[in-house]
Amino acid sequence: MTLKFKFFIIAVSALFCLNTSNVLSMACDCGEHECDHERKTFVSTLPSSGKWKDKVTPKSLWKCQDVEDLGSANLLCQMCEREHIRYAHTMQHDNHENLTVGCICAGHMEGDLKSAKGRESYLHSRHQRRAKWLGSEWETSRNGNLYKKTRKNSHDEASHHIVMIKSKYNQHSAIIDSVRLERWFQTMAEAQYASFDYLWPAKKTF
Image (cartoon, rainbow, N blue to C red):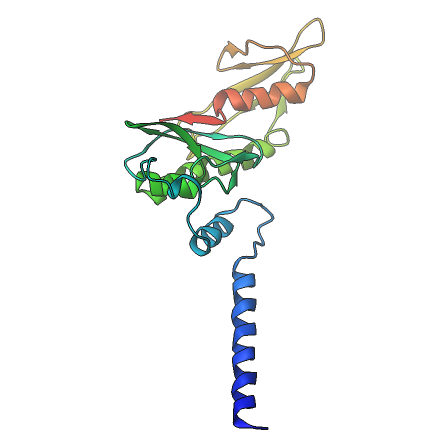
């Protein structure tokens, strides 16, 4: 085997290992399309896109007006115009119209990636708690109504009392801290989820 051929084999092996490492680093094992690891990897490896490349859109001094869980990652980030987002940060600037963007873009626009991640973490936690809402700690009163007493936690410093009610037309609603929801629902589950959304809305304003 010639010396040149040995160097060729070494170079090819090194290139294969590098490509394999890059592919693995971009893999996401969390089961969520829009996880933080995946976004950071793509943002760090791909060139700037969308409004990050123009000379008109401000790139700093933005403030977050609100953040909302859209329920699925089907909205295109209005800043990078590349990532589809579920948790939408509405950003406000004195010299530009509002933009709805994803977590990483929001963090760079306001110069505070930690705050942007904190807002998204709150909504992700809310989503997990909502998914468990129907099956956790519901009891039945003497009158046959389901009810729940929540505890103070990191998301809410107050406790709450929720009672599910049923109308004479077999529709369902809830009384939360002595206040009845304005709407009636066809199923008990819909009313229970509505009680959660009343206490912890999917949209948080700052």
